[in-house]
Image (tube, rainbow, N blue to C red; front, side, top):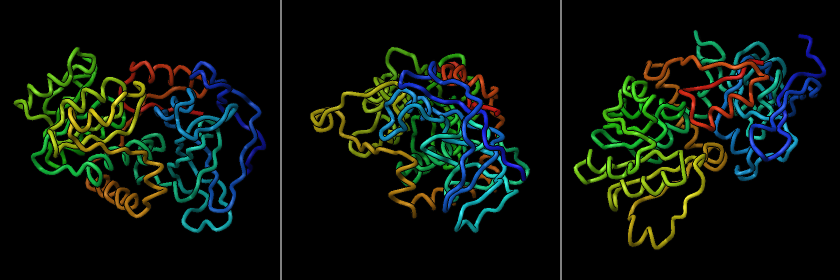
Length: 332
């Protein structure tokens, strides 16, 4: 296969957000090193991580200028030394937390690439390596959800939220979901038992009303800011868990005094990349469970809203402004 020397890509030139994400036409096509594969990108996933990196709030994130995009799907066209599990011609969805996915070609570690399920398009596989494992890890090994428990899922109309609603219902939970009013029908169609206004004046009061004052057993909190405070207030004392995996709404000022005297709950931090790095066995179990959910039809292919590569800044701005539903993809 003839691999060009240069390519089109989106380059982040500052930490001022998506407005400084620009299309360039002379980016060097990367060469896979040991343990890596080169993917010809068919579709790249747009995630809140990309926004966090663009604003400099992602710990250890890349320094501008850098090629943006952490999630890509497409055909493997070349492999580095030591790669035996993947060969040129196979289609995969892969993760590169250092970026590079918003491009025509990207290098990812072979261990962070998952074959696209049979019958799925490349763009439908976006989410299998980032948002879906995040939702599953938050629900099961970290959140410990069981049949009959009540789960509060924030941003339920987003890619991670939608998957979380489906999985929580599969595991027998009662789901209270939050979303903006225009997205409520989408979330109800996924199986949520209750949907409340994410922009309401008192989310905690709404949740306590729906639970008879008891609060929920588990919260999936990927919003941050004031939403985290509301989540703690809506969680059962002592036994309740709050899994925190995102902060697009900003940081929250929670103190040890709050945890001792106000919110006696379990707070669990989740970063799917760190989970894979620090607890590979647990991450492997999550991916195994995820593959089983796909094989049994609990999770199926989802068609994302697509944008041309040059529209990347628009896609990220709309995601940041909560103007989107479900998964978003860039097409190089």
